[in-house]
Length: 262
Image 1: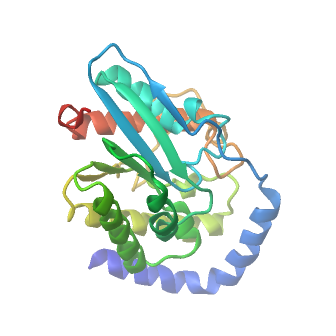
Image 2 (image 1 turned 180 degrees about the vertical axis):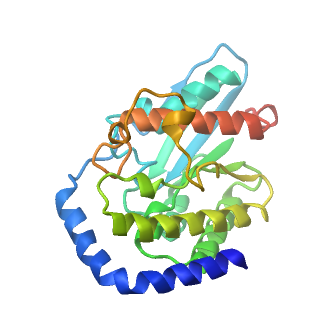
């Protein structure tokens, strides 16, 4: 109830800013370089262990690896390396993601294309494009529920892990107005996602950065905010690796990997 009131008040405040957002959005589109998605959409992290896992990563441009040269040195490759050493287990991974996709797009266009018969874990990264399209929390709730139900029709018991929401308030390419409106919206979408996963068995959400989370300080990094972005919006390879290590820590702490071994 409180979050609904906050969203409504925020939306009312933001309405006069919409024309400004429109023109600023067009400027951002013109000035941000068009970076390709990462290469090598599948790979394996080998460990000296009898256990093995198959991970599928789905989502928007961050999961597609925009800003990294290769998935092997980006988010999913680093995540697999971290899990392989910590569990330990050999981790095979494959990426199904597309720049510009929303939760609804992923449900309709990506889930039907997943080829693997058996998947031990599905990692999902979404929220940026839905916030850019000014998705309401209610509509986002429906789209996320639809996504989970569609996945469950193919993989009834596979753990589903939603990655952190994008830290839009930290995007160096965005103006203060853009950060205020879209950053606050992504906060509301994250809170809504927190509620959704509680109603589904074996579904998780790394919500650690919903409120302001200084990742640089927490990870004790010698880095500046600019070091974390390849184009002011998408993560740099450094940011992907730090993000993946944070996700691996969350997953090892919250999931029972032994029960999912192939």
